[in-house]
Length: 257
Image (cartoon, rainbow, N blue to C red; front, side, top):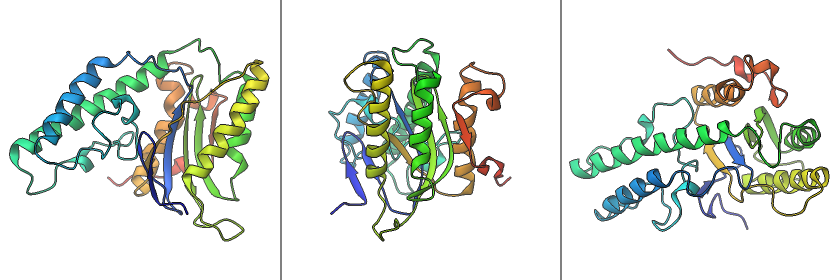
């Protein structure tokens, strides 16, 4: 029986009926040592926080590579200020200061990670190539209306952003879990890409980086971030020109002033 919380290298929350912003990348999209300085500084802060007896910042073991947790279920969503991760009332001043430093640095880490993904122009496998783009699109759309509702996705040369809502139950009255959807999407698209590229082996990083969508404002930011990624990366001037973009029209949502 599946649980609504599970972990691999990251903590994941997969409540049926929940909306998600998910990012995943090609296996070798970011060199392991590319963000070592951030990793070392974050590790130091985490150890200091742990010394206070705190449960930890994200719930992951201190020894896990920090690059594996920066875009996890509790990461600050795109476009959001990060105020949601401020220390709760009653936190000791010094511990609160350390946590604020951690979250501030983690936000910079996420930005640097995204910048590295966007700066790659010649990946070994180019997802935006038409023959690769089509099967990835078909895979992302396959469960729409069956197990989930698609809001938007963007297929970049070396990574994918996807915003969608899981149904609580499928047509067989069984709960729909994020873990099953991601396994299905990655497995099928990897097989198709390997056929096209005449290769064997892993295509995707094992981990996906998921953030739960809390409200309409959060959904708006996630969709805007997703569809604007090709523009931010300098690949096109208008997001409508990027062939890897798809939207159901929910980008018309408006945030509260």
